[in-house]
Length: 492
Image 1 (cartoon, rainbow, N blue to C red):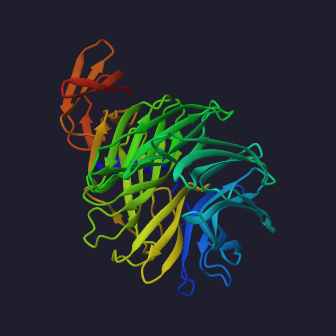
Image 2: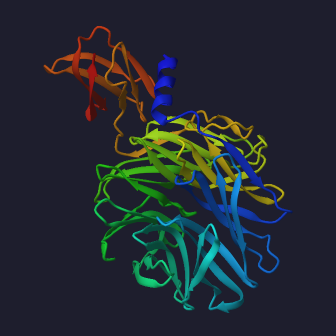
C-alpha cells in the first residue's frame, strides 16, 4: 500500500528537482537573525532581511541579502546609525523590482514616558542599493510594523500602536506612497482589549483581513478583523480559549483566503501551561468551521503559511517530544482540511543534537517548486540562517533530519472532512483523515444503496473496491452517529 501513497504525494506536492542549500551566518560572535523573506520568481532568488549587531556605531541595524537558488550571494546591504536600534523587520516586493524593508527603530539616547520611543522606518532598496529611507515619526506613541503588502504602488502595513502614557494598544492599517509619504492611517481598538495585528492580506473582494491577537492583562486571544477598502472596520472577531491562572498566549500569526472565500488562520493555542500549534478554518464572516491544534506538553507553534495546489505548507517551531527541551524549526504539509501529508523538523545550525534553539521566523515557497525558511539559532552565540528545501521538505545537507512521529492532534471544534483519493479510482481508495476516533465511512452508489461500510483504521485507511462496478459513488463520514462530511468519487 505504501508505494501508491508515496507516489501520489510526490506527484501532487510538486517537482523533486528543486535546488537545496543551508547557509549559516556566524559573524564574529555578533548577534544576527533573519526575520522576513520572500521569493523573487522573476530572477530565481530569495531575499532575506533582519538585523545584526555587526555595526561600528549601532548595536543593531539593517541586514539585507539576496541569494540565488544555489545559495550564491547576489546582493548584500548593511546599514546602521549611531544610537539607533532596529527591531522587528518586514520585507515586501513591488512590481517594479523594488524592496521595502520596514523596521521599528528606537533612539537609545532619548526616552519618552516609560519606554524608548519606537517609530517605523522604511528602507526602499533595489539592485543599486538603498534608494531612500523614511521615518514615520510620532513621539507620543510606540509603533511597529509586523506585516505589509504592496499593491498598485501603495504599501499597506499593519502592526501595533501603543498610546503613551495610557499604555493602550491598537492595531492599524497604514497606507504609504512609493516615495514613503503617509497617505492614510486607520486604527482599530477596543476599550477593554489591546489589539495587535500580525498579518495583513487582501481578500478577493478588495477587503483587508488582519489576523493577530487581542490582549487583556495576561490573557491573549486570537483576533481577526475585516476592513473595507476605504479603511472602515466591517467586523472583528475575538476567539477566546481556556482561561488559566498563568494567562494564555493564543494568537493568529498568518492567514490565507481560499478560492471559495473561506479562510485558514495559523498560529498558537494555549492548553493549560503549554502552547500548541493551531490551525483554524473559518468562513468569510469569521465563523469557525473547524479548529485544530498539534502539540503535547510543551511549546509548539506556527509562524507562517503558504498555499500551493490546494496544499498548505506551514512553517513553525516544535519542542514536544524532545528530551532536551530545545526547539527545532518545523515544516509540515497538509490539505485544507488539516490532513497531514508529511512533517519534518530541522537543525539549521547543522548539529543534530537538539542542544540549541533553532527558531523559524518566516517561510516562503520558491519558483522551482521548492520552499525556503529563515530564522536564527541560539547556542553560544546567536546566528542567523536560511535553508532551501525541495518540494517534499528535504535537502541535501546533514541539517535535514527524520520526520516527527506521534504528533498529537486535538480537534477543538468542528469535524474536518476526510479526503478520498485517488479520484478516479480503480482497485483501491485511500481515506486520509485528521480525526480517527469513532469515525466510520459509508460508500453509497447513485441509486441510494449502501455498498460498503468500514471504520477508519488510522490517519490513512485503504479500502478494496474491486467488487464495485464502474460509476459514481459518495463517501459519507459518520462520527458519533452524525454525518459530518461527504465526498464524491468515480470508480473506473
